[in-house]
Image (cartoon, rainbow, N blue to C red):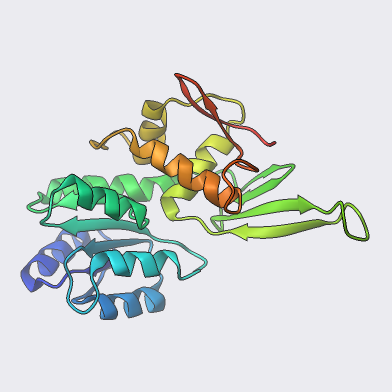
Length: 239
């Protein structure tokens, strides 16, 4: 685990809290140092303060998501700012959770466990294969399978890697593991975010939109794999 927090007393409190639960933890006190530590350590989870010197938390989060590392970490934004716009901006840059200051150690640990529990949930199944999609749950990677029709020889399958954030991956894996099943927002929140989530359930719609865009290679109308069931929720289907 990596903590990126410029206030030394808060960073120390966070470190003590997570290490008391048995997690290995490193600390950085500014955005640039934190980004370098992320590249060096490749942690499972990053607790990231929004207001950092040299490079703010949103910039750090964006660079983490664009880094292309093989193991994409969960990112929890930590900030004293509680306005709705900050949460929206944070999630749009790829953050998985948001914890405003002041916070209780108990709430922090509950959220950490909920995030890390998502990884454990998919370990029994190693791979999901459909005609046009491959989801490797062990490596947490996704590939589109494109069958050629205009090149020689016809029918050759090429694989196009799709880079997803940790939470985008979890949403897709949950849907794809039960193709055809219709999931309500509430069910997805319980299964992916965990029962401890207290935010707006419309955050599910935001993640579905991002998944469709990425799986459609920029065109959300094709190859989206996720069908909207009007008035109910979402279902996975291979087009």
